[in-house]
Image (cartoon, rainbow, N blue to C red):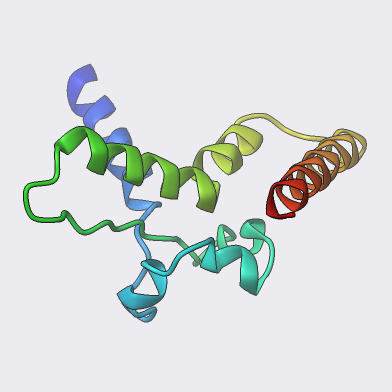
Length: 118
């Protein structure tokens, strides 16, 4: 009984990561993060909006490399971060602190990348 309940719960949570077929798959395969170009990832994860992550296996590609690409694309979309943030109630004050920290980290990453280009 407990096993069945856990299986049903797992399937229900996994189905939240599937996006309806209204978005063409080609836009998901573009370089970079297409979801962040349209707006914050939080908006895409509201009720009714779910994101599907797909990768295409190359001929003879090792499974480890494909899993690494899948993990990287999942992290770019932000599934795990949003699930982690929603696990517990987050007050507005805590949300402001988290957003400021994320903004500082983004700025530092952009500065590092800008130095590498020159």
